[in-house]
Image (cartoon, rainbow, N blue to C red; front, side):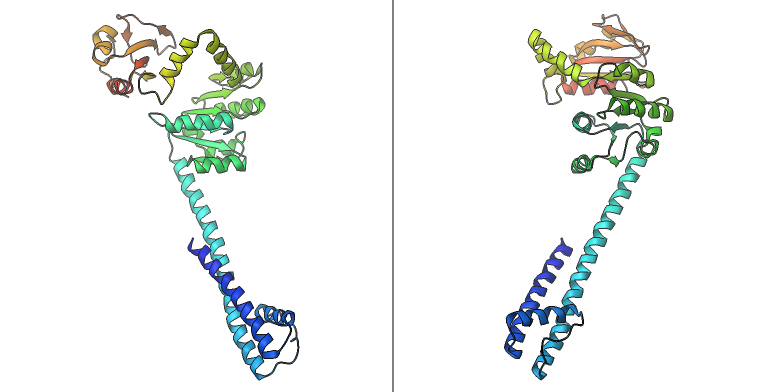
Length: 334
């Protein structure tokens, strides 16, 4: 802001000097307005052209003063411009280095490849959830990058299909990757590259067209989602089962404070390992409903009985108020 003010001040001063010089030649030398303006400009610019006509002693003295002040103002403007350019470039470089250091320090984060309509929604959800997850966004569109910057997300500008870009995003230390670019072919390539760089990473891929799901799964994706299929099914359910849809929206919408559906993993620090649901008193103490238990083997137990055992590595799908869900997370060692 200071550099901008200095530049504006310099431009205003230059305009004033040109005006004074023009009027001065008109009054001192009795030249026409155009000749006076021309003489003023070439004097300040120091281009070395000849004088409009012979100068008298007063004209010479005036010209000396005009050169001193005009050249000084011009140098001031050039200096202000240079300072703005250098400061802007330095700010950009320092900002980029800071961003790169933050990305390099990430562990167990997520990489979002493609921040169009789908990718941007994913970023917003990860950033604004009850427990925000660290992530790096990758996109090659300058307009998208500008939007990402305005949201203060960590990002890398580049093509997600390039191995070097994924390495810069910290894929070897990442927990998961979302391949959400608009091209199914690019998503397949991203999935192949990601799986090669980090065999343990969880990969969620977007499929736009029929048949792409199988290719993505073969390429190494753990899960494939088609936004268009899900959207169509959701709209159909809104007609066929409107109450069910309303309930799901109430339970899963992040702004709902009445009821939320959450998944909670059982860690080693939990005191409920190898304890039945009835003995851990989750329902009695917290008022939560355990809708399902996903076993460490991948088996899903829906509506588990009170005698169902909680084991290390299980994931409890619980329904209830947010504060009670947070308490259950603490109990499960998360």
